[in-house]
Image (cartoon, rainbow, N blue to C red; front, side):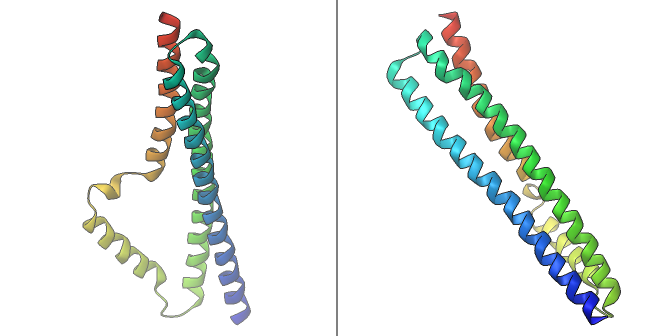
Length: 149
């Protein structure tokens, strides 16, 4: 029985590490996109909205869309590892008498929801996707303005 617990704990550690890796990947990609976006907007502000700037604004649009899609994928992978952790926690709870891990985690979740009634409903994934879609929208608006002038 002890061997099974050790295996479950090790697998929990692996899944946790993988879930963190997905979040680090998302953060790194977002930071890179923000740096490129800032540079692109700075360049556009110096040169003005001329037709040559379509070479900057159109890729900016695609970069924002890519960021939103990649962020969604990282979130999907993160959710996969979280579900695996929950399943492993359930198995561990079943194996260890009086652990009551599920009950404890549910109590903490309820307390957290009560303490953060509004922000607790906001999904961080939606915030990240909105940021990237905002970049895409900015590129699209600037491209449209260039074409119209």
